Image (cartoon, rainbow, N blue to C red):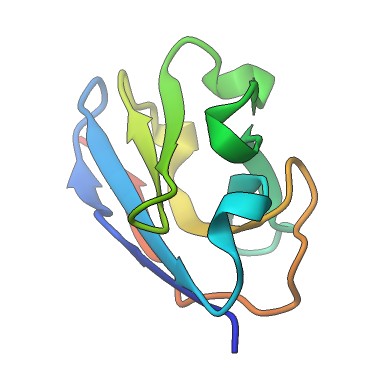
Length: 118
């Protein structure tokens, strides 16, 4: 059974930083690209950042380029999202899933809420 457990979200002021973590299980983590997705109420879930397997090339949504960094540790089945210079538009629930820009699995975790507000 594929499972994702996201953590690290919270309330932060504009300009602040957060580091999100996602621990995955139920599949061969090292064989899959991984991505972070964001969902805002009333909108579809969108890809924010992706990383190929074995720490390969990364891809970012234009709005987060230069501020967010995705990384992974295949030994720990974990993918991270370092979020710097946060803006109110970054607010949302963040999820991880397999895939590079499109989700690979139908299963989703509970996500972690990020709120950027003064």
